[in-house]
Every structure is written in C-alpha cells, then in structure tokens.
Length: 223
Image 1: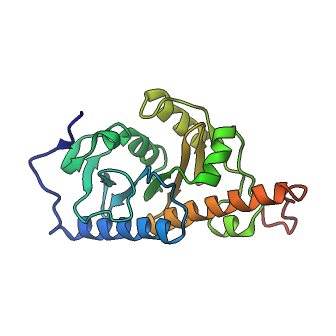
Image 2 (image 1 turned 120 degrees about the vertical axis):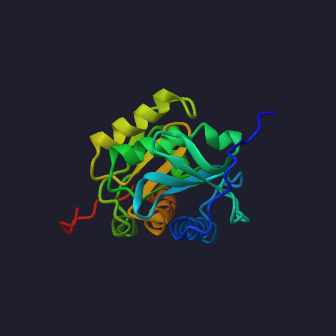
C-alpha cells in the first residue's frame, strides 16, 4: 500500500495565514455536508490560496470527510512541492489539478472538487449543465457549465483538459470532468463551496424539469 507523502515540517498552525486558510476550508467542507451534496464515498478535495502568499496553497490531505481534522492539510507550492503537512496517496496525484487552475486563473482563490451525484451524472453523460436555474446564476455561474474531456485521474491529459476548458470558457466558474466529477472555483473557499452546492442543486432540479418537458431559458436579459 502506498505511503502518505509527508515532510519533516508540521503544518505551521501558528501562522495566522495558514490558520485562516485552514478554518476557511473547514467551513467550506462543512457547508458541503450540511447542504447534503457530497457523495457517500466522500471522494473529493479542496484547496485555498494562502492569504498574502499567492505562490502557495493549502490543500486537504485526503478525501472530503465529514470529520475532517484540523491537521489534515498540506501547504503546497504552485510548482507542486510539498512544503508542510502531509498528503495521502490519493491526494498526492491530484495536486496539479489544483495548482494548474490557480496558474491559469490568477483571480481564483479556492478550488473544490466533488463527486456530487446529480452534477456528476451530467459529467458521466458528457452533457453540459444548463444554467437555467436562478440560484446558479446568483452563485456566479451565468453560462452553461462545460465538460472537460476525459483524462485518467491525476494524469497530465486530465489536467490539460481542465485548463483548456476553463480557458475556452473564461466566464465559467466550474467545469464538469467527463466520467469523473465536478470542479468549482471561487474568490474564496466560501464562494467555491456555494457554487459547488448550487451546481448540485441545479443538476437535480434540471433533471426533474426534463421529466416535465425540459428546463426553459431565463428570458429577463440577465444572461
């Protein structure tokens, strides 16, 4: 069994920036669970830029668990180097999925990845998620959520497909990962979490609307 990747440096929780980032991520993950959008497996991961230090991020060490501990985080550079804390093997391979999004989008402050069931259904079907639900627009997603072509988890192909899709859709705050899951971004952890919740709710509502003849476009000129 693969061992966790760990540095000799513990997470510097005495650093106010690290503590603030950790608390923000813990709050964001709690919101995902209280909103009931997480898959039963808890598969997913989340990160946030360290305040005042755009070259480093704080990343969850393992899956997004309801009982995520206060030391289950890692400080990672945008080059992918582990600086402090630890990473479980399953999260070590997704570091670039986070860091390359931050590189491509300097204004992004947080990235959250889930396997939220209804939104992931669209990803597995290879179908863009229509932005026809007002709550999604209020969460900052004003256009249909595009699908990034499939690439094996953690592979260079997967990462480049995600970055290329975000680049092709500069107004989209999220992408669906074909045959895999969902990636939501935000200016901060709370914003990324709100968008992740809105995506799942929108997918569920849209699938319900499909049975009634299909979701209708918003026609008030706000899109």
